[in-house]
Structures are given as C-alpha cells and as structure tokens.
Length: 165
Image (cartoon, rainbow, N blue to C red):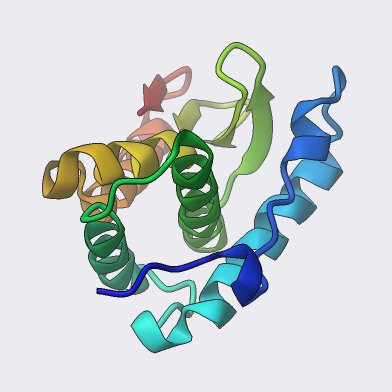
C-alpha cells in the first residue's frame, strides 16, 4: 500500500479560505469543489477511471477502501474526505444536477436538487468520511444512486424533501 501526500501531488487544500469566511460565496464554493474534484481525478488517474461518470464511483469506493487501511491525523483525514467528497459531489452534480449550499452548523457543503418544486440534498464530504471510518457499509455508488432515486421521486411529488447523509 502506498501512502499519498495530496499536497505533493498537486491536490491543494482549497477550503480554509472559504471556511474562515462568515459569508460563503456560492460561486467560490462551486469553483473550489469543481477544481478540487478535477485535481483529484487528474492526480489519481493511476488508481481508477475518474471521468465523472457514475461508474467511476466504483473506483472511488476502491480508493477510499485503500485510504481506510491507514491511520491518519485528523487534518489528513479531513483533506482526504473533502478531496474525495468533492469528486463525489461533482459526479452527482454533473449527472443529476443540483446547486451547492453551505451548512454553517457542520461547516460542510451540501448539493441540493429540485428547488423549488422539491428538495433532495446530499452531504458527500460526510459520506466520504464515513466510508473511511466504516468501510464498505457506506458504499458511495449506493449513496449516489439514492440521490438519483429521490430526485425521481421528487419530480413526481411536489414538496418532497429529503436530506441524505
């Protein structure tokens, strides 16, 4: 197993300036998530086909499984789950749509689809963290398929609302 140093691989930690701000600029948030996801895909192309397809989430599961074999300091874990979580967010957004918002209470973004007719949201950073901590029981492909299913349900049921963690 290889231990990855994200900053040495060109995946720079872009969130501190966003998190420290009281007012989160949504355009900056989206740009930071997109940039981080693209850098992840580029830097880890030897670990899978990170082409932002739904199928690429199989490779995300494998990557997170490998990462979960190591014990990291809290800051390193944070960098992994925000980086991989950004990729997960972008796969979901590019394939099923949505808009990013910031949850102040947990200092994490969410991706929301369906507004104003319905509300379906995911917390991909948290899900990536859960996978690192719990392993395959927090399957990413299953999670994003749930996002898709709830969007379809929301399209049929005006006012439908669900937040997936």
